[in-house]
Figure (spheres, rainbow, N blue to C red):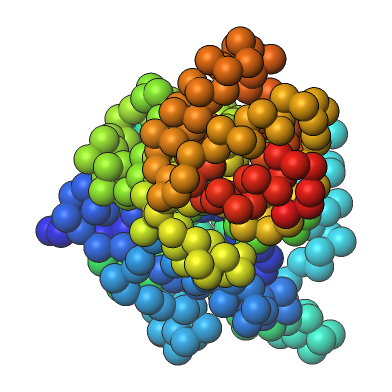
Length: 447
C-alpha cells in the first residue's frame, strides 16, 4: 500500500513553528516514500474555527512549499460520523452518560484525593431504561462514551519504540457531546480509516489518545496505521508553544521578521535529530536527507536567534532569481544580479537590501573626514566603464600617490562613498555607485 500521511490542524488560531514542524516532517516522510500528503482541516469546533485561520494555514504551507495531494475538512463529513456513531451504539461500544460537568469534576477530584487515577467509573452502564427515561425527563441530554476493552494496547512507535498501555488503566473517552457533535477522538479515526492513512505522525501529547484510538480503529473495522509521536517543540526558554498566544507564528516570521521559507524548513527539519543544522536551498535536499529514525526523544528547542543566523547563511547563497520577486516587492524593481551579489554577504534579511540600494542609487551624505586626502583620491578616479577590478586599480594608484595603506587608506574612502564604516566589499559597490556620484561624495557633496 502506498504511504499516505496527513497534517490535520484545527483552524482555531495561527500556525506556530511547532505545528509546521509536524507538517514538514509528515511532508518529508511522504515525499521520501513516494507517497501522498493530505491536508485535513479538523474544524468541528465550530465556535473557535474561523475561515481566516483556515486561509492562513493554506497560506503558511504554500509559502513553505508544502503542497498537498489531497484536501478534506471535517465539517463536510458530519453524515459519515453519524453513521459510524450509530453502528457503535448498535454494537454496544458507544453508551449514553448523563453526568453533568460538575458531577464529573467531583468524581475526578475524589479519585485524585485518594491517590487513584481519574478513570470514569462506568456508572452510566448500570442505569436501566427507567433511570435513563427519568434523567431525560429532567432535561438531561446524554454524552456518549466509547467502551474500551480492558486488554493490553501495544504498538511499535517509529520514534518511541515499543509502547504498552493496559486498557483497564484508560478512561472510556467521550466521543459525542451532549449537543450531538462528534469529538476529535472519533472524527480523526473515521477520517484516517476512510482516507486510507497509513502513517500518523504527530506530537507526543497524543500518545494516550493513540492507545484509545487503536481500539476505535478496531471497532469501526479500519486498518490501524503506523504511529510516530514526536517530542513537542518548545521555545528557547523551554516553554511550550501556543496557537492561542500566537507564539512564534509562521505568519509573524514571514511578515514581520522577514524569514526565508528555506531557512525555517532547514531548521525545523533537523531540530531534534542527529543531523547538523545546515542551510539548504531546496526541499528536495531535505527529502534526500530525511530519515525519521534520526528523530530523538529529547525535547527540541526553537531559538529565533539560530533561525536568524541560518536565514543570513541562506541569503548569502541564494541566486538573484530566487529573490527577484522579494526585491521587487520592496520597490527595488531595477535591482539586478550585480546588485544582489554585491550586497547579499551583508544581509540577514532581504529587506535590508533597501539600505544598500539607497547607498548605491540614492543621495548619500558622505563622511568627508579628510578633505585633502579625498581630493587626491578623486583626482585619481579612473574613467568609466567600471567593473570589479576598478576598486583595486584605483586604490593602488591612491596608495602609490599618498603612501597610505590599510585602514588609513580604505576607511576614509568607505566613509566618503557610503557614509558608513562597514558594509559590502567596495570592489562590488563602486561600479554600482558610478563615477559621477563617487566624485561628488569624495568632494563632500550629498549625491
